[in-house]
Length: 364
Image (cartoon, rainbow, N blue to C red; front, side, top):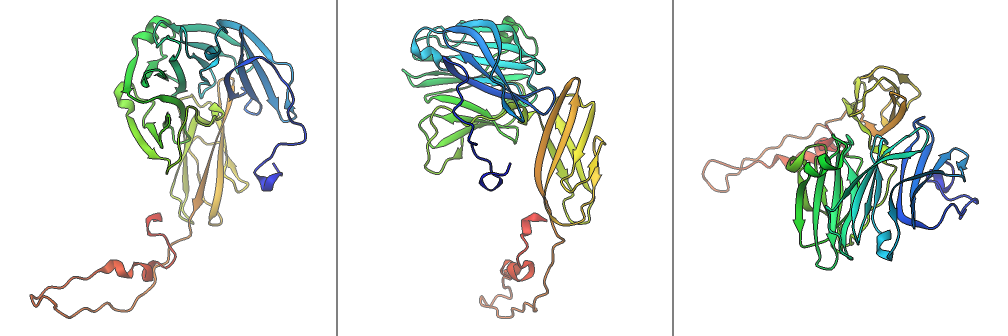
């Protein structure tokens, strides 16, 4: 990626028409080969999904069409609602807001791009004209689905957790836990790289957070309005990501120069094999490797792992720190007894800058 100083930019090949009409639903996930990607949209006045393959050469213009599940059409508000892939790419969830609202779940084949096996969760969420299921998000282990159910007329909403361990409508409905009921609109939900789910509180300057979405029920720890947007406002949606970015995370320990840095890959998927790229030209195939860097600095470590027929990519930026230097200071002598009681206070923190110099004390 060379344009815009390495940040990327739209090339001269742009505004290429792909498909219409469509709903607002779109989501992306990595191909089973670990290199290419799938982008899936749901068509309007249709029960079909259009899934486009994206390779290094661009978007393949002919999509994989999966005619499966419920019809999306009718009144204009029926176009509203989110769609998300699970982080492992094996499930796809669709929310339809407004009249006769529902959530529908599917299996997804990451090798072929085919959507199949619909599981309909209906007669469960609000179903009036300005009511129903809107936001969706999976936990990082892909076991739990979180759904926001909002009523725009009465300005109320609920946040649901559904367990997908048993993939039938009755079992999923029976697993429901209501995490919150609010006199405010809970709207978009988005998994972050820290494994937490961020929740849009519509028309407010705060986000709420599901702190532990892999945990069942109330132990998932929904925290109301904990992220201050500093005067900016959340509306309905949140930025979208390629969902497979969240299939796992890398933990790094011992990041001082000359230490053997320990790496661990945390994922709910089985790990058949893994290739670590340490960001300095060296690699390892150990599950939990250690590596000593030749210089301090910033590095990007990658773990490319196989689970069954699928390949996943996880990455993390981190810093190797130079050994800290503590500077010698002149003696700190304080003899005056202001209170004339034999006691006096030494404020040693006043010497921190002299001792630490430019070293950040909370780094070590």
